[in-house]
Length: 324
View (tube, rainbow, N blue to C red):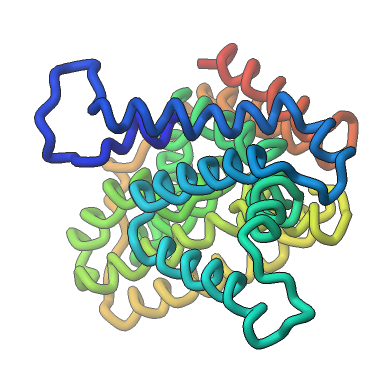
């Protein structure tokens, strides 16, 4: 539903406000109907084994077609070409290997009606864990914690040689604890730190590279890491708290390596730090330490296995609303 609403078939098509092209409406209704049918008949479909009617196969084809079209609109043609290649391969392999059933009904059954297709582990993990943590990160961002982290990094490292670059590394590490997103991290911290680095004397290319490298580390910075961390926990069957514990050392080494690189570059260029009068006052900054309460609470709840991750993230969302 959201894919058709947010990504119309023709972006250049001039439509009135709050309207959709008729073709999009039809495609959205029919495609969504296929998924609603599966949701309503899931228990029956699981119990019937491999015996599927042609009506069910047709509904599965409609659902797959709708999903492929939404994917094309959201991601682009490359992923569609890859998916199309493997679907054609699955249908044609029966021609060379008679023992492999290369029929449409088998392909649709496996892709749409089983946990080996589109409703496999990534979708399961996304619906159970990733969505609620993304929502938590968004709520926490609205509290202004990113600005707090940037100011804190300025207090800690801004006065030293090459201070802005070190601020970029530290602030990216801190913001990565919340977002778990490389792009979001870059947008949040880069708008502040890149101009500061250029003003101090770093080459523009180096400033951009430092911010990109540091922001990429947000994917491995606990407690909220990229989607791969949740998939790892599900695949190997360990608590997410174990993944958090084992990610701490690699994250420290990663950001430590970048920190050393920018320090050596600053020494080579003879760069100074940020003037003391331009740095935020720590006494004023500490008054906003309450913004850390939701994040600290989440870490304690998850690492101590006091409750499920979904419940911990949901309560942390409520805390972030309370401190905002």
